[in-house]
Each structure stands twice: as structure tokens, then as C-alpha cells.
Length: 113
Length: 114
Image (cartoon, rainbow over all chains, first blue to last red; front, side, top):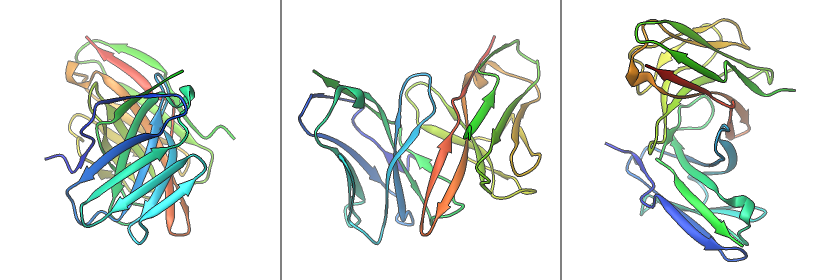
């Protein structure tokens, strides 16, 4: 049973527009969420995180929104750039600190010029 | 500051052979992790070590063993490799900052078992 789901395997967006990547989770114990970006042949790179006590966290072009009642989070990238083309993974954990992460299967984002 | 390093980058094994994947971090992190990533799948946790001297099983531990050699190093061993273990393996360590944390990943080891 997949506890973290990214239902869109891929997303195509034009440069300058908004990219919205979605993630759903089933485990109500999850209280910390992270987004990672991964380029081919490289390890995942941390992008942004959010604790369940918040519903929004912003860092530059990246904003993560959390809707606890819907068990849904989304990553907004504005404006999208060709260099943002990568696979994006959503991950969740129970508690912060020395917890283990459960990852979604990823969404491949392609930003075209 | 190299972050998380992994060796080797690539490896081809025959079924039944053994090997050890090495991981080291120079960030003084307490927790370290081993994941595997297969096509169309997210990262799945194999083993982790919350602190030096402790190790615990993750989601897919069968066929693997680990050793937390010291605070810096966390190795993953395949005693008798099987084709199902063909995958990309990532090591990670945790940075805890207040009530938030990040996992830093190494560049990965691409393993093929024939």
C-alpha cells in the first residue's frame, strides 16, 4: 500500500508559467513533508519542507502548500525555468529529527523554452 | 566539505557474488540511510542508522546487511547478489536544524547483477 502518492508521472510546462506538482498521502501520522529534485545520474537534492503545523512555506520561486484535511500537498514553481526540468519527489515522515522518509514515485517535470 | 560520497559509482556483478557499497559523510550528521531506486519507483529505504552503533531495517532489507563503522561511514553489503538487486543505490545523511531537517544524498551507485 503506497502511503505517499504522486499520481502524475509527468508534467509539461512552458517557461515563465507556473508548475504545480501534487502529492497525496494516506498515513495521518505523517507530520513532516519534503520535496526533492533529481537530475539524471545524480542524487536527489533537497528543495523545501513543511511541518504539519503550517499550511504554506515559501523559498524563492518554490512554495509548498499543505492541506491536512485532504491529506494533500503541492509544490508550486513560479516562474518555471528550463533548468527546473527534473524528477520531483515528495516525501513524508512521522516526526522530524531522526525519522525515516517515505517517498512517492516522482513526477517528471519538463519546462520548455 | 564533500558532503555525502559513495563508492563505487558503477558495478557489475555476477549472480552469487558479494560486494560492499561504501558511504561516507563529512557533515558530522548522526543519522545515515541506504535507499534503492528502481525505474518508475520512488526511493525505498533499505536500512538506516539513527546514530553510531545502531542500525535498523527499512522497507526492503532482505538480501542486505549494513555496518555503521563510525559516525562518518555507513556501508551496505550484498552477500550473494541476485538480479533483483539491480538498482541505483543512494546513501543519505540527516541534518537536524531546530524543528526541521533535510536529508543529503550521495551521487549514487549504479549496480547491475547479471
